[in-house]
Image 1 (cartoon, rainbow, N blue to C red):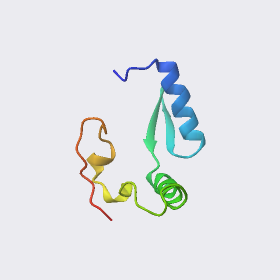
Image 2: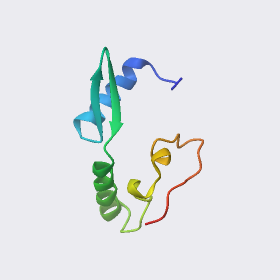
Image 3: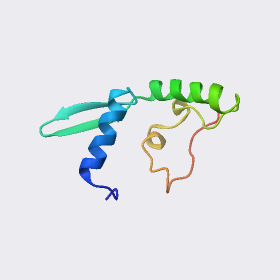
Image 4: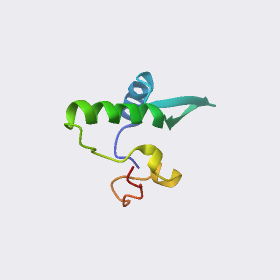
Amino acid sequence: QLGMAPATLSFHLAHLSRVGLIRGQKESRFIRYTAEFPTMDELIVFLTSNCCQGEACLPKASACSTTAQGRNLKTDTNTCKEP
């Protein structure tokens, strides 16, 4: 469904978990991952300040509705409010 091998996805999710961008919780033989939006916001602030010359690149995750936070970015429209 995602267009990549399960081992590849697990590899990337494990790295995102190690740096605190997502959190994994073991459920039976699976790991359910959830986004760590406060950490992602901190990363966006850092990148905006240091890589985007202080210009906002994207709205904060906290400005998005719950359904928008889990949306498929390739197909959904932006439902976030500008800060």
